[in-house]
Image (tube, rainbow, N blue to C red; front, top):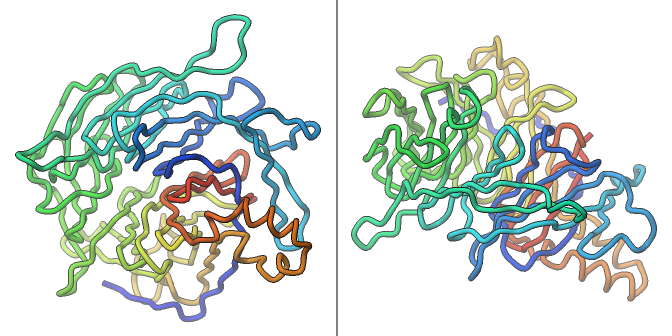
Length: 415
């Protein structure tokens, strides 16, 4: 493993604005595809957990300020002033909800934007359809279409569906496949209607925590054992398996595969480290790492930013991070060697998004008691430093949503 520990790293800090507060802890948040726009407002979805009735909820998002003070029930105005810059505003509102079988562990829109799939803590995959209300009524509906249970009980052990991913390499409709991973150590390929296509029963000795498609037939997984594996739906065992070359086990909680360079992937660990892996040398995959967070990295994503490819992550420490370096910018041609530029070396840029209430504590103390009380009420959950479990980046709106255990939707403009 190639290691670099932050020499010459530049770091910015930006605010996450406290938005609408929900009743439940939020495990996942996802923007809808651009193709799903039915009005001038964009859609996004959230999934909740650790509640008596977990929900999959569809929301409207409008990047323009709502007209007048009466913006309607359930709507919140979010505004961001980039530490002295021009203020930008947005509004959003809940429009439809459906009950999930159990706590939501994963959430993804299908490419058509009219359907959304959720995985649950009790091993189910549930497919919902988003539709319009009857003529003469405004708004949308969300209804359960089908469900299957690829991960079930084993003796007295409840095997949850800890992660799933929709194939973006195949066709639409019934041809689009689902790959899922569970606490039972299994990887299952299935169709949207729940028909199993292939299964690997002993993918790992410990719980699988993350899964992403790598090619049209391969998926990559991460687990609490610290192992990263690549599985093929045409084989019965891993075609590639590796881990950090140390004597200590480093549990992994998140993984993302580069959208165009499938031999590059990134993982997030229990201790807050993020590692970028190069799989071109299959006999000894190389990696480089950065200490991006102070605790578990729950989710990782690659995204295309103004300056090129970026890696994003959110953490149990309550923050969201975005970073880039020469090695990320040269993904298509660079080789991970000591001379090609490493994460953590000169040229890296890290941006950390933290609750605005923490960043503006000094300014808040100088305001009137009434204003301070109002601000504290709006951001109290974020101020507590509760875990951020998920985030989603909207390339068109230039906005990122984040949510977690506080039940709070937080927000930042990134363009």
